[in-house]
Image 1 (cartoon, helix red, strand yellow):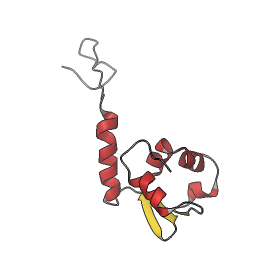
Image 2 (cartoon, helix red, strand yellow; image 1 turned 180 degrees about the vertical axis):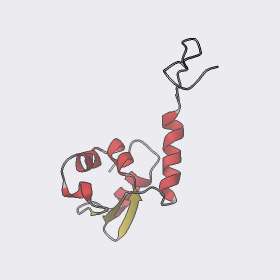
Image 3 (cartoon, one colour; image 1 turned 60 degrees about the vertical axis):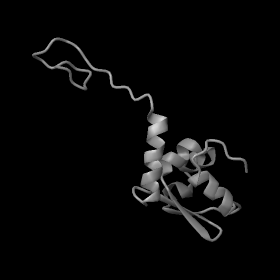
Length: 106
């Protein structure tokens, strides 16, 4: 009998099963996007011009260096739920948050 564990069961011979998900990027991000679009598990709202964009800090920080710096350093925004971002344009923010593309020209 195999278990999804790195430790063998006491009454069984030593063996383990290695779980690999090679398609995490291609399958994981669309699921996170669907969750975000339904407003679930969102922990930040970006306010740009007259628009608001809900998102997940971890996804924003992992994919956009600006937000990585904002959320992983002791900036006041790292603790705020609603963040007003001056000098951004709503259209570009929409493209960053909503786009499924990895490269966006601004």
